[in-house]
Image (tube, rainbow, N blue to C red; front, side):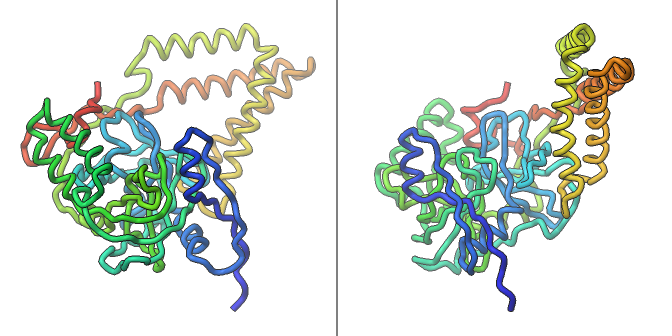
Length: 394
């Protein structure tokens, strides 16, 4: 068997987490792995299938699932109360995502990624935590501190339990938070009790803010857990949602919640601000075209390189034609910026610059804007999902 080519693995360890918790920048290291190791195998397998999740309340991690590879699993608390959600793939492609369902007690959310191509190979394999034994090696892959590239961390399985079984510092912190909520909203008492009793995996893989929702895999490279939180009093202990709970969410025939989105064009949602902004942009660009056209061309050149680079990749998450069209439009802007510098071609250059600018303005005016406006329980109860109460949408 031929030797595998070497791979560069991004990783963090416990010392990096300790330093980050003390306010230092997270030190993501790179190491070249030329042999077989679980960290290398997990990174190779999971990095292309992991995403950075951005909501209107912050960042988290996630991974692709589903028979078409166009769904993403993350933590409920990553998207709780958010109006908009986007996912960013390993190569920097960004997509809007809709919340399809959540499990608020097990802290899971299922997202439908809009505009992505279907590819079953993109989906991870969900495993069963029941096969784990204390000391079983595990690797977490996610985006700690919103790091753009996937990052791995290695550790071991400690055991299965609930937050009720944890030391007082862990239990008291959670109980104070959740029973503080239900003090003013007693309808959430059962949810709070169920959350504290829900099954969790105790693992030693180092994680920190931003890792939430990331995959934790075993030696078979199956997702046996979803990174959830860390015990700041004992950094050898992190908590994860069991993989079996992910399977339950994916196989649920009736969603627990229904999510209503309002979809309108940007210009429909806020016509005065959009038209004023775009009108000023066009006016200023025309008045100072001598200076702005070359700057616009330089910016378009950088974007065109990115678009054509994505279009020529072996595999993209969005239709390749989308990047070709965007790259061609940016090329017109580049040509306009260059031609505007020379008297003989200045008029043509300004024309191409104007076409490129109007195209971008049109895209801004006509791009659909999706906003989550309402969440309801499919069982008819009136309360919102648990832990969304403190993050209510406007």
